Image (cartoon, rainbow, N blue to C red; front, side, top):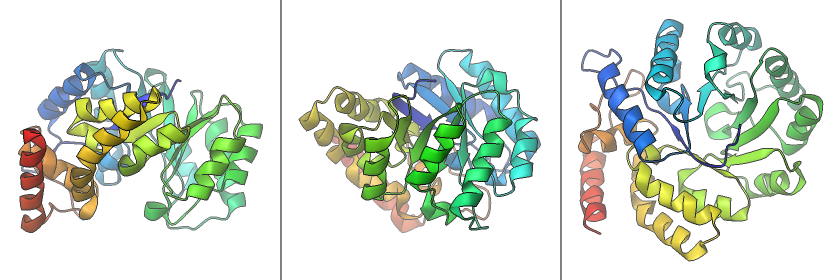
Length: 293
């Protein structure tokens, strides 16, 4: 799968009773595709997958496959901190409908680099579609080092890339400089997406793209075509809004923004809650100033 460009980590809309709002999800998927995003990431962190039962995850995956109707590539998030459970989950999804798996570093257990190597090796061996590693130490407490990544891609030929959200510049530079040409490094940070692409990442998997897909597309396209000034200017325009949606966590912030745009209800599942009234007001005000520019 080609990960170049703009992938969006899709939210899961909920109604006021906490059930999945499939009607809003359908509208959302269609809007994203019509906004010319490059691919969709299903059941990632932003989807609140940790609060979805396996039956709900299967329903969402099948629903998005149906609505997408092969218009854009699909990536499915399948990860966890129990390797056997991850492999069991792989067998529950119809993976042939997806182009890649995105699998997060195991959280809570705090595995060693050897443990991470064995974990992803097992997932790779049990997947018949390509695997993308997902490194996000701020959420997992686990950081896969470039040396371990290089070991994995040398041994497992279906590991095609990594979504890197560590914000460790030395680590990202090492990946960029020493990875094989066919290994794809994707930014996992909305705030630094332009700079990351200009330095060599192939694209970004965004959160803000749920609400402003066209606007964030511009940042990505300008960056890929090395139009530095335009890319950084567009990034600057969105900087305040991006900071605000992450201030009280993801996806609380993006759902607050989307609710203001009439795209979904501002509902989450515990332990996540809606953003504070104070932050919601600031998001509203920033949105007004953004729309006016």
